Image 1 (cartoon, rainbow, N blue to C red):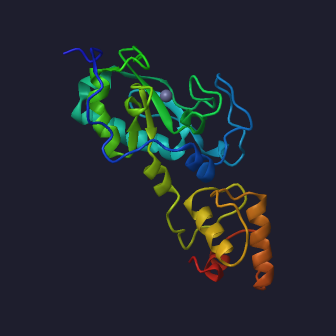
Image 2: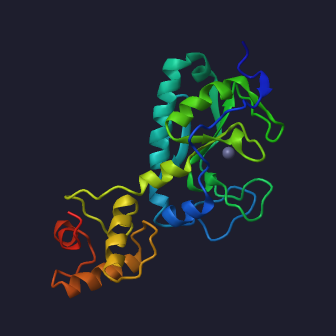
Length: 247
Ligand SMILES: [Zn+2]
């Protein structure tokens, strides 16, 4: 059986997973850049940039958002066990690429956050928008789904080579409780920062809940520390976390 044989998009795909919405990505991760066009450009957001990592995920190397790269590594490991034939054929047409969605001048591609990856089979790209997909992509889509990834064959304009971290998975990354011993400071981002911002706002502060520890968050942490008679360093260590009710 040829893995690159074109078949119709299966009738039932992406059970329980949906594409990550632009509003969610902007709210939880911030905008990777100020401006976008059709070509790949660099991420300029200083809180997002440190989370971009380059690593082998098994059959190929990618640059992407750290948690997405880690998840993709697990997906690939499972593919290597369940479908070693497909694993051997897999390549990539890229992960991180800050640009608009192809054909759009308003929608930011999820590749901009490094949470989407385009796959090739034996070096072949699946053609977007033809309503068909390579057999091998359909075969591994359920494995991606199980790990909280959405298959692009489900887009209005099908994009079967495209897999992205799903809406609920992105949200789950930002809904955790901080660990007692953790120290959060300027430049950190993620669920723990979001928890600090949520606590501060519950106390009357007015932070944008973006999970990014920027200068605004630091200033309001310092105001909180001043009000509570704590050392005013703008860092959320064990004491500040405890007084915030987080530890
Ligand atoms: Zn893509």
